[in-house]
Length: 121
Image (cartoon, rainbow, N blue to C red; front, side, top):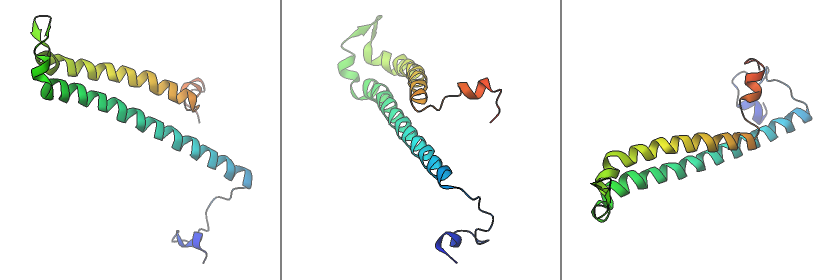
């Protein structure tokens, strides 16, 4: 048995055959998908970092300094603890939605073509 056949308990007898062109096309698709997910994960890390800084930093760590500033009659640190982090999270959801749409367009992975075809693949 060859190495590739060792990975399958049935000896790889029913593996689909690919010609060289299909194999290269699949390789390109995997590279695009890998690049898309790296970009997506990077975006998520950045946005979640912003949320942690706003929610944890502004409402807990920097609360004393922020409480010196009044915002609509309330200390700013208190405001961030009660409202600011929630509003920031909702804003970040909209930012993610907008940016992920651009990323999907850049990698040609949007659902628009899929929707036009009526959900058929």
